[in-house]
Every structure is written in structure tokens, then in C-alpha cells.
Image 1 (cartoon, one colour):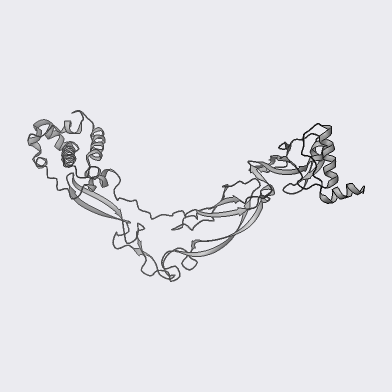
Image 2 (image 1 turned 90 degrees about the horizontal axis):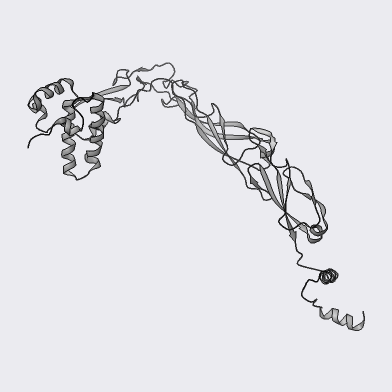
Amino acid sequence: MAKRDYYEVLGVSRGASPDEIKKQFRRLAAKYHPDANPGNGTAEEQFKEVNEAYQVLSDPEKRARYDQFGHQATGAAGNGDFGFGGFGDIFDMFFGGATQSRRSGPERGPDLRYDLTVELEDVVEGVEREVRLVRDEVCPHCHGNQAEPGTRLETCPQCRGSGQIERVRESFLGRIRQVETCPRCRGTGRYVPHPCTQCGGRGQVRAEKKLTVQVPPGVDEGTRLRVSGEGGAGQRGGPAGDLIVFVHVKQNEKFSRDGDDLWCDVPVGFAQAALGADITVPGLKTEELLHIPPGTQTGTVFKISRQGLPRLGNPASRGALNVRVNVVVPTHLSHREREILHMWAEMRQENVLPEDKSILRKVKDALGR
């Protein structure tokens, strides 16, 4: 079967630049890769055809000979057998692979998380809290050097101090060079013949630390506080990470929160709502005086300015305390109270249930007592 033109296989013009050829090859290789088309023999053949075309057109000398003499000038690429040990090799080369950079210099330590719960009252003025955490710290015995004091680190014999090892393998593209992190020294290039007896050669030890965290006024559920330099220890002389404190505000029985505003429900009597009254309502720190005007209806909301919560980052700005009034209807009435309410209903021409006199009351009425 006659071979297709390599430019046609890759879908590029004969004057395509090396970058255009490479970009198109990546697209087609990803499209026809057997891992993306399991059991599809046609896709596998197309994948091989694309690889063959790229093997020639990506090499300036092979491409020049192909442009002049066609397929006959590329005999090595004409049998479709590319000595390709595994389809993953091409992706190791072009899509990241296993190559890793060496980490031999200072490395910053990890950030740590701590969850801290505070009361709603603490949000008004802020609060200091002591926290305990377990973290990695620089080993006090070897000072992070990993080696037992009095001994020294040596050059890694496997990578000879480079922190990397090189693997060369044959593929349809020719020889592929892969550079990987040395598994023995993990990229440091150093070997510890006599590990520290206290940390086992890690350079770090687990330790408990007590810290005082300053919680500012106005924090809300989920507020994050960053304490610099109090996270995990760095490596090879690198700085420590940070401690990230996630603040949780405990639910309050009396108040609900809406941003910087507070809400509460206050019961008032029927007479207070009808005639008006001055009552005290609870606040987070002190009680507040609230004027109830005559004729107040249940559900009416009164706003007391600047008695809510401070704004995070601007404590001088405070929200309001919103008081929702609920008129309470009495469920147990004395005889005198019932008489008064019946008189009230009669004056306002309101239809109510007739008064139900008890047997004792009826006897006393009959005797004139």
C-alpha cells in the first residue's frame, strides 16, 4: 500500500515551521493515542503513521532528503516498525513525563491549618486565645543538617551530586533522553552516611507548640487569620510556613447575625404594646433602653444604631441591633382580668366568647355574696 505524503499525514503545508509541525503532531498524537482509543486498531495505525511522519519532518536532514527524494530517501522509516517500547514514552517527552527538577536549595515549609471557635461576645472587642499545635520543627540536635553532629554529608554516589539521573532509551523518534530525580538522595545530591540519631536523618522532629493568637474584632464564620512563620519547618535552611487560623463563631441563643447587624426577639405585653412603654432589651455587653410607642404591632422591628458588631478591619464602624417585638397574649387570666377584657370588648363592639362562670361562682352569685 502506497504511503501517504508526510505533510498530508500531519495536515501541514510543505513550508510549515518546526513549531507548527510539533504543535500539529501533539494534537494528532493525543487524538489517536491507543490509551484514548482502547481496542481501536484503526486509531493505533493512524497513531503510528503520525509518529512516522513526525520522525522525518522534525529532523532537518531527514526532512531535506524527503523533500528532494520522497519516501525512498527515508528507508529507516518505511517499515512502520519504530522500535517503540511503549506508547507512554512519547508523552513523557512532549507532555511532561517523569522528568523532575532538582531540589537542592532552601525550601519553604508547609502552611498549617488550625480551627478556632470563639463566642459571639468575643467578636465585639476581639480576644486572645492560646492554641496548641503539633508541627515539624528543625531538629535541635543536628540543626536540620540531617547528619549526626561530628559527621558530614557526602556526595550521593548514585547521581554524583547532581540530584538527577539520566535514562536513555530508543524510540521511533530515535534516542530519548529522560532526566529524573535521583531516588537515593531525592534530588538533594547529598548522601547521609551517619543520620542524626534524634531525627533519623530527616532534619526535623515533631514537637508541640503553644501560641497566642490575637482574634481581631469583627471576625465572622470562616475568617482566616495568618500567623507568619508558625507553620511547618522549612528544609535545607528554608523559612517556615505560616499558620492559617480558621475562625468559627459559636451560635448564640439570644442573637442571630446578619453581617455586622444583630437581631433579637423581645416579648411585650398587650397593654405595653397598646399604651406604649419603655423597656430594657439585652445587648451583647450591656442592656439597652427601648421606647415602645403606643399601638405597636407584633413583628415591628426597632433599630438601635451602633449596638451591633464592629466591622472587620474597621472597628470604629459598627452595625445595628435590630429588635423585633412580639406581643404576648396571656393564656391564663384571673376573674377580674376576664371581666376587664369583656368590658373592653363590649366597648369596642368586638364579638368574643361569653364568660363561663365556674360552679362556685354561680353559687356565690345566687347567695348574693
